[in-house]
Amino acid sequence: MIAVVHHPAYVASGQANNPSQLSKNAAIRNRLEAEGAGVAWHVPDAMPLYWLETVHDADYVAEVLGACVPREKERRIGFAVTESVAARAAVVPGGTWLAGKIALKTGFAANTAGGSHHALAATGAGYCVFNDLAIAAVRLAEEDGLRVLVVDCDVHQGDGTAALTAGYPQIATYSIHAEKNFPVRKARSTLDVGLPDATGDAAYLATLESTLVPMLDEVRPQIILYQAGIDPLANDRLGRLALTDEGLVARENLVARIAIDRGIPLASTVGGGYGADVVALAERHVRAILTLGAAFAAAG
Image (tube, rainbow, N blue to C red; front, side, top):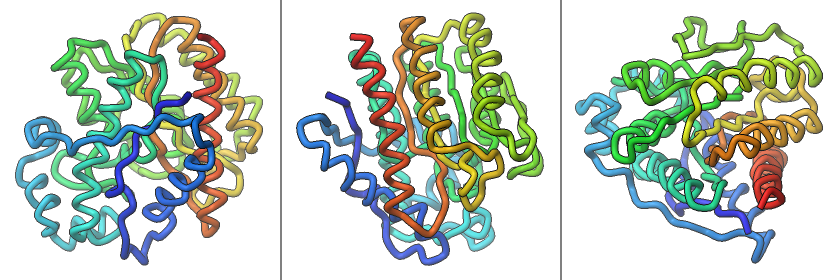
């Protein structure tokens, strides 16, 4: 049985500028419900204000929770922060944190949202409002005293996560991404692996393994927060790395094997995936969750 974290507020409405990013959470939920007894559902609480303000500026947190984000910040985010988006932003970091707490007990858990790696201290960016990865990592490090590694396999660099966790010695960040893709100005992760456009399955997987394994053995994290974006796919609207569906499945199996071999629990987030066919996007996100879950279940 796979532990899955979901909250009804994840399904925010009214975002005509970016319908796939906010409506795909409903399709992900629907597809996972079809797994029946194979999924154990968990509902997160909103992340306490203290932890939101530990990572983000208090004024920005107030703007989001009050649904009064200035227009220039909304333009940077890519959509309006309505009351429903504000409610979603409050619970998604709680979902990533809860997935981490469950993974510490079971080995693996998945949040059906999250991976908002572009959000910065005083503003959101790139369809990201609050940085759930950074917030969850900081809470796990500060509250539980854990060494945390954020492994970001989205096609875009995890710039916000890198910037927001840079001052925490217990948190390390790894980002493998298309070097020429958004953001133009990259932050500095603990380890950045920038890839050329049209990198295919074989080169991607070889590079991922040859760079992530030594980092894991050096950092020796006690938990991995995994940004499992599906936008490295060749047909993704914002992707540039030319991976196939089979390559993405191989990526999840590789990440799972590397973690399992070292006894490291892993909590996954959805991350990026863009296109007009929301059902197809959801199917790929769910396949990532199911692949990771099956690998950890097989390992016992």
